[in-house]
Length: 350
Image (cartoon, rainbow, N blue to C red; front, side, top):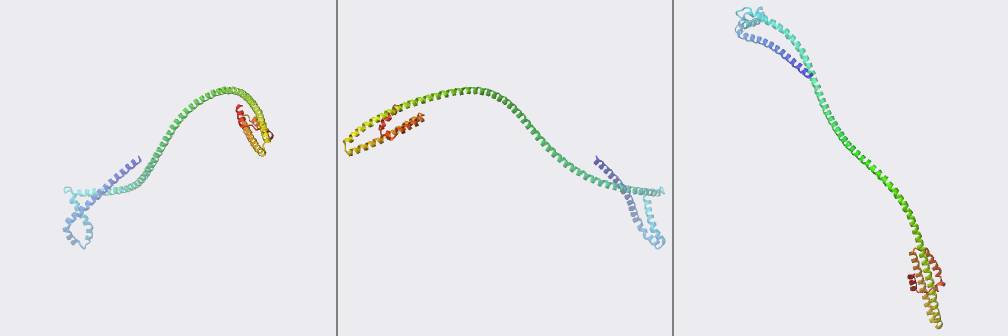
């Protein structure tokens, strides 16, 4: 609105200035026409008489007056010829008076108009400068407004993007909340099922513990029965082994004693009947027979100990080894001269 008011004032001021300039131009044209008409008639009519008049008044006081009056009279004559009406004498005088009054009035009016025009020009210049300044201010304001609008558009776009991102995040969070709610419901259902299963398992565990206690009691009873049966089996086995070993030992001792006595008798008879060479030969054979008998007894003892260990009678085997060590003294070894084949057959029989 302010720009429109300024443009209207500017247009009115320019129209006034144009009117004043047209009036001034009209006045100048009238003055120039008078000067041109006076100059043209003067050049036409005064060409012939100028020389005669100059010659007649030259050097007189009238010449100085003529220099001032004659041009005026010539001007008036030209005006009378141009504007005067021959039917109305004195019309030219009235015309001159009117034009003189008009010029006087017009000169005052023009002076006032010039002053007003000067004031108007000053106001116009001031307003024009103010207008230019206002334009610059408005341009700066428009530029600032455009910048602010651009910044506002950027901020609006940024806020729109942030709002969109927040809405997207809210949607994602809402979906996540729904999913977590469903998971929570499922977890609660699963927890209830687990609690029910735990209660059922606890009841089953109680039953199984009771069954386990009963089974442990039964196992203890069975273990006791098995242990007693194993003890009875071991005792019976030990008794039988002892019986077999005792019988074997008695048989072995008796057989060895018989064989030894028989051999000794035969050898003694041979020694008594033979010479010293044959006696030495018999002594060597007797020594070799005794060494073989000792080896056979050691092998037999080892086999008996291994049998006792396989049967789980380690203590019995140790006792048997102790007895055999006592039995295997030199005095008894001389009497133990049985064969290995007899001992193996006796072990198989037992």
